[in-house]
Amino acid sequence: MKIQQLWLPIQIIYQKNSCLYTELQKKDIKHFYYTNPFRTFAASNKIIMTVTNKTIGEIVADDFRTAAIFKKHGIDFCCRGNRTITEACEQKGVDIQNLTDELSALPQGASDEVDVRHWPLDLLANYIVRIHHQYVADKTSTLLQFLDKLCQVHGQRHPELLEINRIFNESAADLQIHFKKEENILFPFIENLVKVSQTGQPLPPAPFGSVENPIAMMMDDHSAEGDRFAEIAKLTNNYTPPADACNTYKVTYQMLQEFEADLNRHIHLENNILFPKAIALEKELRNR
Image: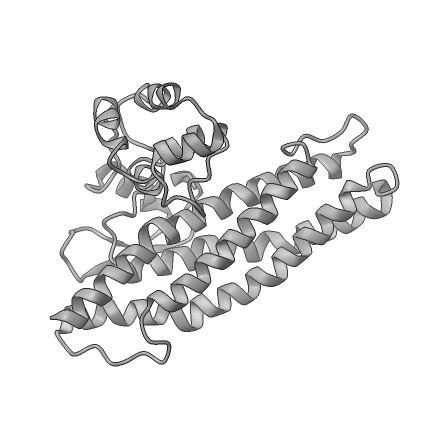
């Protein structure tokens, strides 16, 4: 998500090791970005040196601009971000040298994405809910209405719309349940991990055992959504409306494409940043 789109007030931490948060209002977001010490600076000469030692998810976490390159080559960076570049290229039949050349060609400078790698885990969880969960809530009802209308008007000439509508309806229902699990169970536990790490209190036992258990369930859900949207992208010819498409048809395909992009970013933040750090923090607290 671009900086200029982050108009919801979010809590920002100004010092890496500080527990003091500042509520940042709309007018101050750009100022924060340009003075933020945690911005992503991707030096192209460092990419080649590190890609062979990192997973795809770690590479994208370092610089989200790389996500577009992986997506162009059909490499899943969110749901299957735990693979190395070598493994992914072998599975997809992609020339690894061409891919690394494209990564190294990224201009040196800052990504325009919010760099969350150094945020406290409770702040990151809150950001995911207020930005990405809210995005799904805002867009789902409109997409459901548009897809129903397209099926009624164009379904006979374009029967693939019926399948797209079915898949998106399943996705919408499952995401609603998925978000409730995260917001009511997993994220509060992660927030408590942060609290315990700050106070020095013992970590109480969790009803689900280790945090790895609900995380594994959430990641399975993520994989299912990745598969669904891969099928939607295929049915829509990568969101390309047909020649006889009306305006609603075009807008719906554009919204579906944006929905998938936001979902990919959302899953990336959880699978490749929030979840691994939560697992590591729990182990640290259990062993202290």
